[in-house]
Image 1 (cartoon, rainbow, N blue to C red):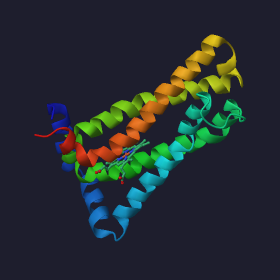
Image 2 (cartoon, rainbow, N blue to C red):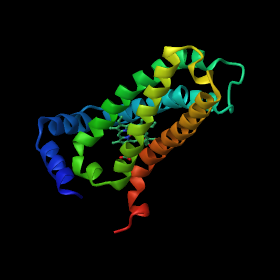
Image 3 (cartoon, protein in one colour):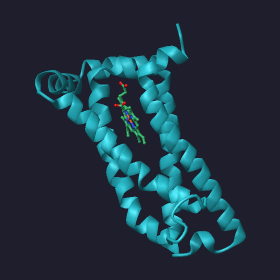
Image 4 (cartoon, rainbow, N blue to C red):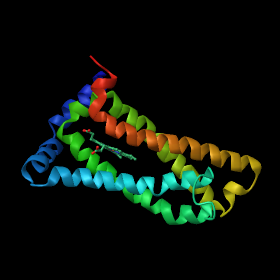
Length: 174
Ligand code: HEM
């Protein structure tokens, strides 16, 4: 593990956040499955909002729905799901920082999550600037499709990496 991550893991392990997370996960009955359920429900919200919009832009779902209308109605689900994902995920990270910060799949998850969020912001900004912004010219239509394709791959990648964190040993044997 790189020294900065090792230092961060050490600092987190010595912090009150670690004691709070360990207390919640070990002493509060039902807390671990509740946190994991919140994580999973928020993933469903992501899949049913931004990923559905990506599929619409690519012509693979909801062909009769206006993309702009979908962005307006569904994107709030993505923006609300993200903080819930962050809080529910961070409780687990704070409890065992070294386990996660030394896990390459965990790093990969965030390497995909950051650009996925940037693309979501870019796409939504275009849509709010003008209702038909992404249909305004052949170039914009092509850009929208490219954004949707990359975004789709990134979100699926984030979800896959999330599940594969527990199986990093299979991917990266010592
Ligand atoms: C925003 C910050 C996030 C943090 C801090 C975070 C953190 C975590 C952690 C610590 C785990 C447990 C891994 C394990 O021990 O096996 C996990 C699981 C998982 N995460 Fe995240 N995550 C975040 C966002 C996301 C997002 C955006 C997605 C997908 C769209 C996602 C998908 C998953 C999946 C599929 C699992 C496996 C759940 C299970 O099998 O119970 N996570 N995440």
